Image (cartoon, rainbow, N blue to C red; front, side, top):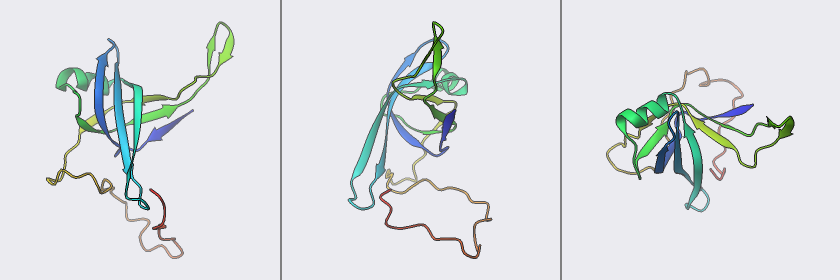
Amino acid sequence: MSLNISDTQRVTVWEVEDKGRFSLVRMSSSRKDKQTQEYKNSNWSFVRFVGKAHEKIQSEGLKRQDRIVLKGATISLEDYMEDGEKKYPKHPTITVFNWEYLELDGTGKMDSPPKVETSGEDEGIEGAEEPEEDLPF
């Protein structure tokens, strides 16, 4: 089983290595902690860019410090068989299926979360709770 990563997840690329049928990418992500106003950074190594994501790297290029938005990605930690024995990976696998270059609003700042379109179904529902403002993220 795998878990989907948001189609608005922004990352910074640090290294790209072409492996033939896929690309291995080292990248980082960050978020601003609402309580401390500090950024929390995460580094991700050995991220596989496959299919359209790999093709776009080959055709458009992707280089150090490019900022991109993931458009279809999963994270998984699935068992596998090796020599007839069930094994468990030591680290999760992140696979990216597509991406786009990040288009900034002209300010160059990434302090606000990406805009997400809503269907309007959530608005005006009686009893719906407002999001908690004291969440750390």
